[in-house]
Length: 467
Image (cartoon, rainbow, N blue to C red; front, side, top):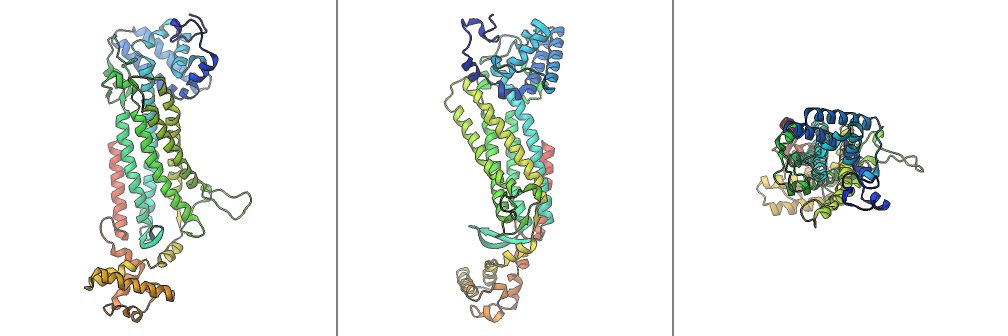
């Protein structure tokens, strides 16, 4: 065969591929990242072929030893990647043939690059999901610990970014934790569908060789072989599902980031982030910018784009494999890297958040945050809720005029709006009384926050045990 044509398919071609087309269609510049998984899959494939008698034990050992040596070359940076060989698979196979001779050409018996790449990507995703899950677990652990520590720290709760009712900082952190708990379940559920083996589907129809796909699946740690060969080589649902998980996770981290950016501002002054998570200004020496949460917020759109790219990539493809699928790797790789890095940044940063308790408390005192408590007090005294709502509204109007919070008014001032109000009203108008009154599951009372943190810790431990 002419050296000008690709050794994996050039036999029926009468002229070499155009140089530009070779570069345009090659994927080795980015799919070399799959080298470890490609070698892992090839070793399992060779082992299975020997077990069913397609390869001899000597051929199997030569292939495995050669692949192991190539893995070392790659890890040491000694491997010469070739664009004319198109992809990671042919680069490794060509090098194997150089090292062990014709036996290297027997490795591809009973498989195609179609099922090979599908297997490599699933092995890669399984490894990366495990790394991402560890970072997500670390973030949740740190968040739960901080929430428990700040169970008594009072801050304003908001709706429409307006002061609504007092809550505790611990309760707010556990709201973040609930988002991450759902993300964690989605990630583990995604992993189940990733862990299905396409290898053995060959190009699209299976193979005539007496392969044993269950053996290969066991060797590679897959739950089972893919059921249908056509679907096995063309399915990228698992990649879309991962980027969907990634998009929802980044949406949650972006919401958290928005609050962190607000809270670090001089206008809120709720928290301080350690200097190592911030940067300064080249012109304004007083600035301390919350760059980590800002950047996470910005990267969210990047991951959304990868989800849309993969959905669009797949939407018009007929069965089975098409060259379009080469375009799955770069968005998927970048989504993986972005999610992992954002989680690492948050897992390092969140436990180091320092709440400014006095600022939080003072902010909770402004904006009549205990107005609902006064209305509830009147209802418990027998006033209809709509009438209680009007009484409190008049009290708030008076407070705006006199620049007094409800808790700062005298009993006589409050009684001008309702003579039902008595001295015990001040027990519910304090911030401490307000949060303590929400003493039910899901409420912001400090005891409930500590109990919720404990339940979250137990649920996380159970999830880790199940995975």
